[in-house]
Image (cartoon, rainbow, N blue to C red; front, side, top):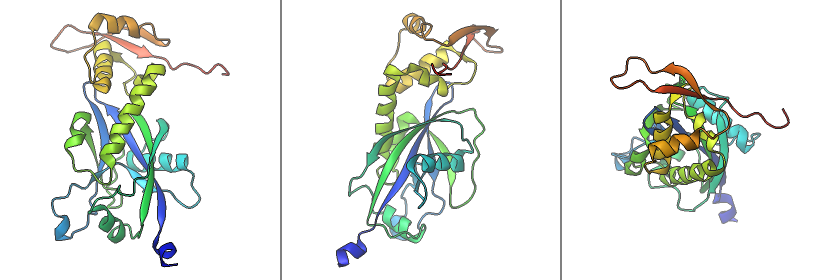
Amino acid sequence: MSIIETYKPEISVDCVVFGFDGSRLKVLLVQRNDEVPDEELEGFNNRKLPGSIILPNEDLDSAAYRILEEYTGLSNIYLHQFKAFGSPNRSSYADEPWMEKVKRLNISRLVTVGYVALIKINNRIKQQSSSQKGQIVWLNIEDYRHEHLAFDHKDIIAAALESIRLKLKYEPYLMFELLPKKFTMTQLRNLHDTIYQKKSDVRNFQKRMMQLEGISALAETEVGVPHRAARYFTYTKRKNKND
């Protein structure tokens, strides 16, 4: 009977929000300003993915959209569920006290469902100053492994990257969710190469990209750059066959 009473599993949602600044792929993290002040936790990096326990009358997708809007102020963005994480050893020595003392949650086990979100990093991000939300931080994707993130969030980010790489093989137009309305072919190639961690051949890459439905060259070129001005391109979203 005591086992049933103390075992309190919960379901949460964690969002891996990717953004692109024109040259670097970044992931959005939250700085937990409401960290546990215990001396034993001193030096612990309180950065984490934006996430939350799902509300009693909330489904998973609704929770993910709520979390994204709370942290970024954005609502109409690309989002997909990619994996659930349920290891009994997900939390570290610092996560459980934080959940108990700050969030006032006594949880024996926390299973989380991961979502990937793609946003244009030049969008205005609504930064919440509330201690319940914390400050948002954009981290270069190649640096996340060097961070001491909460829970198993390193594993979640790694899985999210792999998920995006697989989806782009069949849905390459998803890259344009990360780019501004006008972009150069160099920006597009930088984004592609950063995601896949490899260097593409310039000519072959442009030829392949121009075969994608919806991409077209503009008459405009870069202005005020210290190099030869590059042509801008744009992408028009594909319409559904039923539209």
